[in-house]
Amino acid sequence: MSARQDAARRAAQTRRRLVFAGLAASIALVLIALGVRVLAPGGWSAWEGLILLCLVANAPWIALAGATGLAGLVIRLGGSDPAPEAPTPVTLRTVVAVCVRNEAMEAVLPPLLRLLKGLAPQGDRFALAILSDTTDPAHAAAEEAAVRRAAAALPEGAVLYRRRERNTAYKAGNVMDFLDHHAAGFDLMVLLDADSEMTPEAVLRLVRAMQASPRLGILQHPIAGRPALAPFGRLFNFGHRAGGRTWTLGQAWWQGDEGPFWGHNAAVRIAPFRRHCRLDPLPDGTHILSHDHVEAARLHAAGWAVRVIPDTHEDGGGSLESPPPNLLAFLARDRRWAAGNLQYRHLLRDRSLGPVGRFQMFQAILHYLLAPAWFAMLPLAALNAAFDADGTPRGALVALLLLGYAGLHMPRLAGHVANLAAGPPGTRLAYLRQAASESLFLLLFDPVIAFHNTAVLLSHALGRSHGGWPVQQREERRLGWRETARFLWPHAGAGLAILALLAASGSPFAVLAGLPFVAGLVLAIPFAVLTADPGGRA
Image (tube, rainbow, N blue to C red; front, side, top):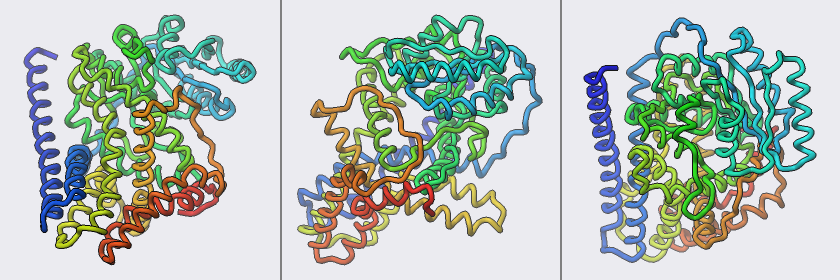
């Protein structure tokens, strides 16, 4: 690319970011203006002032989601998928690296062996590496034996097994140790998690794109959820597939070559990754848990492109992962992610990282940092309804609630709109029924997550956060009522308290307006149990 072309590309990207910022600011201002319209009549009570503060804190986050979803929708409705390119010969050597830690290898190995078999026509251009951080010696012995049995049926050197004795720096340390000592002769690494699954076509798509763009440091493939039996996984996957493509297109439109890295199902150019993505301990001496955003930011700052493939369909284009099998597993995973994302606060002032990379880390922090302000609006609104809600304009309140929900979930809602527009007419009614079920699922799901993340953030503030990086739950199973109640009784108790305050207002409208947002808390226990049943229906 010539200097003139590069300057033109940068100018176009700047214009896109200004348009995106203007759209997001407009959405935020409309939300805040509606909030003032709802709360101002009759003067300002303490509750109303606090509600407005919480709304102002959350408005930029809601606006960011809304603007991204709208941008993605415009691209989806106005464009078409690019014609498939003729396959080019694979010239770069690629290692498919899979990180495991105390995993069930009978579930991990089969999709990897299918992948390796599908890549066999490429000769010695591909190999598989199992990077183990397994801590239990007996489990590690069984793990190694399973890999050796699988490797026995493959050409020599096709499968490498390496286990570290110490889990230093978690996954980031595992990957860098492999690249330092075992990756000689490889140009690219396709990084997978233990629950990842990719088809040969998806891997070849990544590799050929990396070959065509020598300044591309990371190419992230979109990811869809593996098929699930339980309603939780099915509905979660349905919403993720609808919104994921729209979000990816909208995000790629304004982030361009400074896109995100999600840590797996991606191709990494080994040389610049080793040079720029070595993660030192944080100022407090801890190691970085959520490594992906930091690695992307370092490559941005060093002049390497990080992109997401934007043109695959809702099925992930052959790139899958396992969704959390139930609500309790989701909450456990979210606690892990909170611990990692909150560490980014140490890096926001690091001028060696690019501004877009630091903004992505700031977004990741806000996902958890804003949880108390999001959740607090429920009890504050209930208190306001009980003690000081005279003169509240009902039409403006309904508009505010609808706009807030639509903005927060715009990528998913826009995905549904695009799918309905593109789908055959005979399938639209069935799709609408699925979308309605998924929307009800999210309405119950959202307040549980807000309450949980509020508790997680408070535990971090009090120094009671759970350390480490525990193994993720992956297998679907029924949840027992007692087990679930032991975990979710605080959520249900908070919901009942808020509902009682709404009822104390004596206003049926207040109860009806608040019920969609508090029902998920009140019903948290049966919601978790019923949606976890692999034989259940959604």
